[in-house]
Image (cartoon, rainbow over the protein chains, first blue to last red):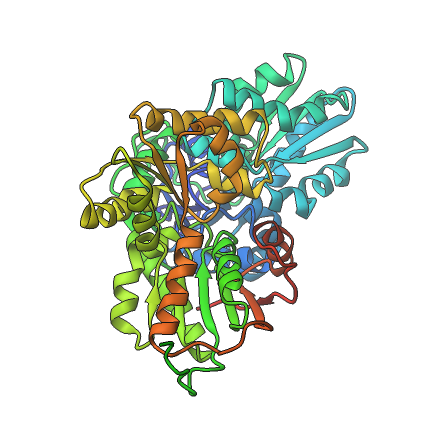
Length: 273
Length: 273
């Protein structure tokens, strides 16, 4: 039996944040499975990228954003950034009274379900890979062998709009070939930018390798938690979307539209001290 | 006649800052022409890169750093970052009582001196190119035709250590060919990271194109201003070097050493609020 909606939570929005545009792939997936929920997105474009920064700095930025979104009375927080999930999820879970979801655990679960030969590859930023978070999340639930590869050029490549072509092929080969040489059958896209490289990744990795996009896995997890806690809006359409960026709202609107199915409008600028 | 050294300024350090490592190419050049000066470097690695960020945000970061270096009693400030020079130089010049030098004017002057056919190309970050600062600096002193090209992939490429090779060749072609097609004879490297791509740039641009590295031009300018204002240390060796980074001091030490002739040691972390 589906739980009755908790009336105080009903109309509250879900907060979603990322260092920049990448988390919009997660917002898009959440909007697809929960089209009646109001969503607020915060892109920390003044501090992007997080992937090359240290744990303490990423935790500081994440706490500031969580505090900002809390003021908007959110009922749930989604950390739509792999680096921030790796570093800040435990801290925010402890600190906040609402459910907090990251992208790593759902992605790891999906990969463990998908792999047949128990060899899983992980690609991500320096921060995500260095934190070993996917590695630990997979190892917690499976005996699969895990191979990791940091791909620092993927994010700038996607933001430059180079999702395909000769240069992209070569850079993808540089990072992915060492993993395919290990005979992985499943590859976790451990950064929210990477779904935009899916076609090239498929071509270079080969048809036999299953690509795991954390965005969809995270969206399913968000839906499940809302339902279990009787926190859904109870609507099946018409959810409002709100966007904040800490810098360059115009650029956010322009590049962000590549990451999201809907056209992004009215991005507000808020710099957090 | 060389001016007598002003005794109060004698032992004060010169402050140099950049968004990250790139400005170390400027510090290295200053250290070569002024080996007796104490130098303090601040790399804003918590906010790197500046090149993709907005004017107001870059000004805010630059002011915070200038305030921090002022506490170290510096006698001169060098903005060793093209984006920060483009956006924050006028503000800092107005606000500070010590000489403030950027990298753009010296680079533009050197290019105007070098060009024969009066066709100058400029490569830089999105911020630098978008600000038109080199364009304006060249136009102020010359009637040369100026062609600009933003190269967002160069900084991540250099930071990944890919200064040469097939991928680098292709990316350099992507950005530089539109400029060589315009028959430029001089190319300003409008970002402090780009000197590390010099060999590839020479290869792709061709032998007939003169590359202008702002670092050397800026160092000459720093020396001239110190001498004219009787602010030199009066020493010819033994200048002390001090390094601060707002994040990841270990990474700063490791990657920074690629940008500087001397080995970088004892990087201190300071996050500016």
